[in-house]
Image: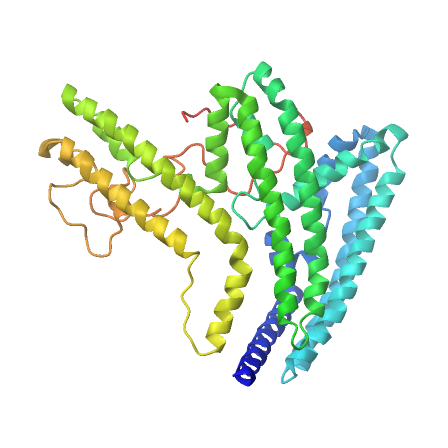
Length: 468
């Protein structure tokens, strides 16, 4: 029995090494062939190794954070241009050497492939750091003593600009400063919330710095751990990185509550609603029942009895739905950090000859089923309050007693204005921007509190007011 377990672990380890070797080779060659694709869509990890740390568009961040004079701008522009040229030249050399590995790798042992690729990648990682440090040292040499005192502010702004979007967990990449701006609280309320926002910025920066340090170090560690029988080390590296991600999200969660309280009872709930929709769009996005309530309560021929029943039913729905939403978000928070281990376990089962079906977690599957049952129950309850003529005027109900077309999901049939009475919604499962004006793109533009002023480095169109 022990021998069989040893053979299984060896087989799994070999399979993982083969996959990792193939992945590293494919990634490296892809970077050599089409580096611009990775530069545009990199979110950290291997692809970020060939993405410059600084771009010309970062100039406003330096100017705003350091309070540069007009005569200093051309100097910084020249430094950025020199950095870009030096980076491109060095990166092209690495890509050229990586491209030559394609012919060498054919028929080569996976362990040797990893070694061939890891050595130049690790060396390039050190060179990239040197280029970064040389550029920052050049910038610092151009500053006055007063400007140099703002260096920490610059580091924080750059970290927010570069690192915040690299989150993988729900809510990890939130920018609560920007969301607080969107609620458009009056100055007296905004000033009262400022201490909570400043504390959030400090704690978030600390967590981001720790995460980025771990992720940067993990690249060379992962490459070095791809040798024989190091699968346990690979998993440990991934889990350490995940712990840093969880720490960032914990700051987001705690700060969301603190800022909500600081904004008070009038603006705090709106802030929280926006933040939760950004963090968990699959949980707090539009649901198929609220549109039915809106359409039903707008009917001109409702009796007083029907109005009373709909009002009471809606309050019950909001209460029960809120409980499910809270459970769903909590389950996601618990489930997501275990993703690296679930992937490893799934691979082990596949190598052992078994079949696997991906699932976020049994708890999430259960909650999703309960939510669908809740929607069906309240849809039926709304229908019971209305007469046949009233139901025929509401998209999503259709004719009384009509069956859903084969293959149609319940959410398609009842989402007002997106699926009608029989056609599936073209945005099924997605957030409808028109139905939810508070929902914005997931990748927020990181904005420091200083940048919220006119002329800041990161600007965003003033959000239109919406009813929360």
